[in-house]
Image (cartoon, rainbow, N blue to C red; front, side):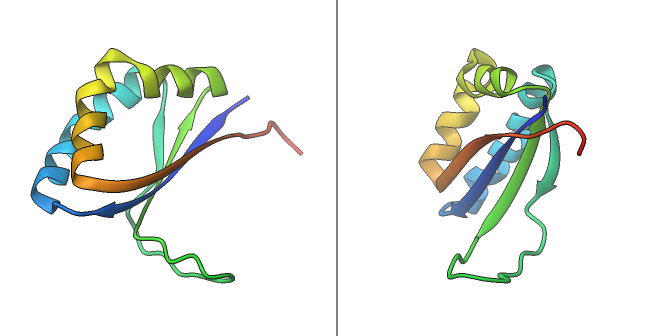
Length: 98
């Protein structure tokens, strides 16, 4: 069953964050992940949430997504992101079929 990582990022240092954008994709792909959304336009439809930069990643499974987040290949990129942006991130199970 697929799983999704949903991220809201408030970038504090755009120059350093641009480096992160170059680093992250290889590790995501290595763990079978792919981008579903990556910083496009957002529009609040209900509630009070004011997202900054929304990223949605799809992985083959919940376990595979957790492995990616904790892997050595992503560690340097994660530290860079954490140093130049404020991030809210959740991992959620998807579902197969209807």
